[in-house]
Image 1 (spheres, helix red, strand yellow):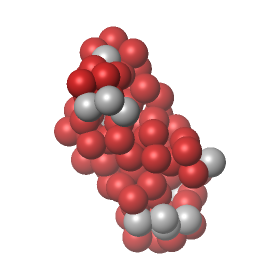
Image 2 (cartoon, one colour):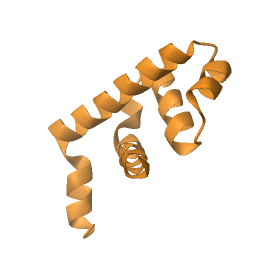
Image 3 (cartoon, rainbow, N blue to C red):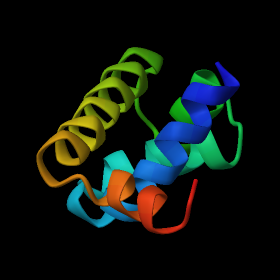
Length: 81
């Protein structure tokens, strides 16, 4: 799970601005600030289910962008990572 969270954080660094503001908030709070779904729901004023759905959608979009654009893979190659 830590590896997955790290992957999403890197993808978010590259593609985060392509997400909606709400999705950006969900990803930042969950992956960067380690907030629970319940904490995010309380902070943003939506249901826990809405947070879960929004987070899954955002993560799917981040992976899609990487699949199509490959910026992270190229960055890793260029930096020997």
